[in-house]
Length: 202
Image (tube, rainbow, N blue to C red):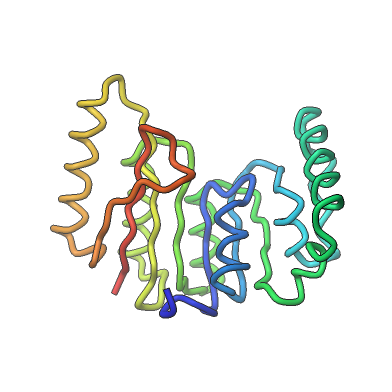
């Protein structure tokens, strides 16, 4: 992962509550991480890596359940860590674009920004997630080599259907040359019937 450490820009589509965005900013030290999701909620450790002036911008839009969960998270952080608020000095910066993936890519293109890392973990069928991957590739919205991470959510009626659609999509991605060094992984955060593909765009 050294190749992708301290790179300029990452886009995390389907970001809420911000786990991937936090990992990109903290572990990979990506200088700027765009957390793209129409949902208002981001975990306190994620908001802490936002510019201070906008950290509380979407609090008013949290659901009552999110307000309760957020209070629990804050209480736990304050009780168990004395340093979590100072992470902003050592990590990359996160900004929250409250919009859907296609709108985020449109904004990225309009601002002439190029991605070093692309993550898509949105709750949709695998074809929709890969449509966004293809758009990044076809519209050259990245600077090579760009790390790509896409979670395949199981929206199918049966395990066999999911396996067939997954295999077909992976074969298409390889055939079209969208990703090289493609690996299929089952990450800790994946549910039993989710899978994640990782590769690089050149």
